[in-house]
Length: 399
Image 1 (cartoon, one colour):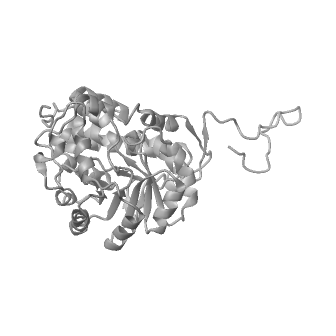
Image 2 (cartoon, rainbow, N blue to C red; image 1 turned 60 degrees about the horizontal axis):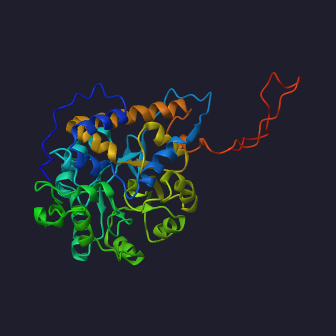
Image 3 (cartoon, rainbow, N blue to C red; image 1 turned 180 degrees about the vertical axis):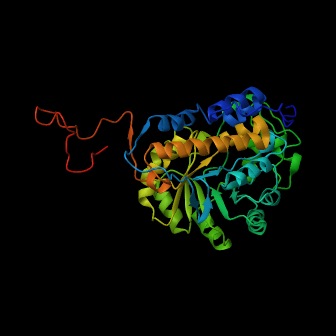
């Protein structure tokens, strides 16, 4: 595979007015193998599509006559201020789409006032990313080398990260057919900077009909990860602990019992088990099963400020933003990610106020309805005496 890390020609971002605009611009700039690596999902990509379909078929029921003149999108995530209920999702190898990689994203996140999550497979070290000064979370994959696993946690603590996020849905990488068909391989100058193998790793050795990155993770990740390991991680770190990759309420409850401070309802953006439940569908039951003190975040499919409001209405404290960060990075480095986050912030505040919400907490009280669901109790049919006024139901209408 040829070197794909040279910066694409600078793209003006002022004419990009939505995250979809940014995605389209990035798609024109990125080499096809990298574009497929970023955009693709596992198997037939059913879950990839289902994540978006869940958002698209979920409708908000806005409230009226609420004073939203002081609409404020800020909140807290894991006890620290965030300018909106968003953090960047952990994404490996960001150097594939721009030479500055994770550093550009961290700088943009700092300016936007949201947490940046640095991944185990980051193309920049934990220390270099944390030094940017954003609120930084560290995402951990459980490695076969346990000493290295806990060394990564120690490094994150020493670097000033404010949380550890353990990803639990990748015993090995899902079968991503776009990468398999193209024999996806990392170029020599993009490495997993937090590990020690560098360009000598299996991720850099091409083999027809396989993904080199998948071979590398199969060799490095420990598929025996279990609840006892989560308990040990809880004992080993003083940082808030996030467990990412849960879809079953029983697993979420068990994670909280093991000491998780937050869970991420996630199907890995449709990149692991194809055919899983969309995260937005799994969210309400997980939120209902957990104690209030355990925060619930969501990722997979978030593409607009309206999507954030929908997630909050269904029980999320906040969302993680994944692929759109890479689209912005590919388009214009720092400026592209900054534009992505600025647009998202503007969309979120707009959606929040138009839904009659003064802040993210108010969004949690909104009703939602799925497009495929019938209406709840039908409105009474008007007669001559009631046609001039709305019917009275004696209480809230079911949705």
